[in-house]
Length: 354
Image 1 (cartoon, rainbow, N blue to C red):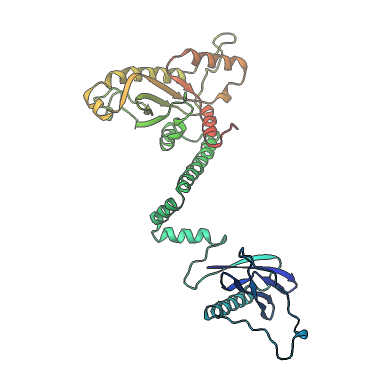
Image 2 (image 1 turned 90 degrees about the vertical axis):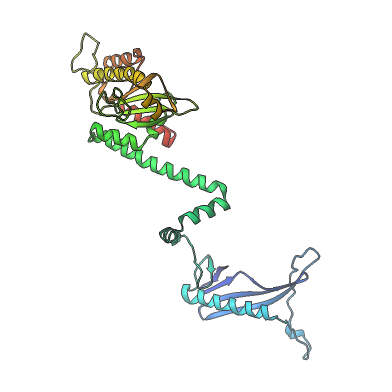
């Protein structure tokens, strides 16, 4: 594959980068071509190199001063003749197909059975290779040629997927059109949202809709919760998650006393439920079947998390004060609102708050 560079010098005329036809330690023969609307023209120039291998500037010969029997002869080898013919053919093909273009341009010339990749067709070429089943070969070749590129591509894809999820999260919180079970599936599909920000412990979902009070963690009956998660480290500890909706009220409709707002029945119920679940699971986790199912996870006074409501409901200082003091005084569970979780997810993806 060769690259031919052209630079326009006048209307309908462009110079071409010199093409080396033949080279020795002491000499170099080049074809310096020009393209015009009617064809190709050019000079064949033989340079002499100095001791450093640099071509010396030529001194033009004035043919008017030559003796009538004198002349200039430049001998070309078979390889040089072949290169000259191929160059003229390629230039003429470019001229016929592209014309004489203004400015500087690079043209890539390949064999007829080769694949030419440029900015316009690169996506289509890659798509064709993937559709033909060469995905693994492409990935392996990238890994061999540049060990960092596979990591960069993977991270870029993860970032792109998380950015899409973030936009979906933001839109859905605003529209409030998902049920509790829908939100459960959303968080189950996007565990990274819970994986950061919650006291900076990485949480992995190990069982959705766990059975805390049944015979086993996967059994039927008993007390159910939304998620059984575990911190991700050398030693893993369980953490229970209860999910409500973004529209679930945080506070009661009226003040309990002047300046004091009681929490809503939904919030109080969710806190009570997960406290009972944590206590029940600490007992049930010690049963032999559950130990076998979760042999890498340890349960000691499991933490609880309640995802509920939106702080936009807290539209005056007394409401903010009442809600924040309530959750600060509760040791377990941690109460987090959807808009807070959204901001944490945004920070994971973009590195900054809205």
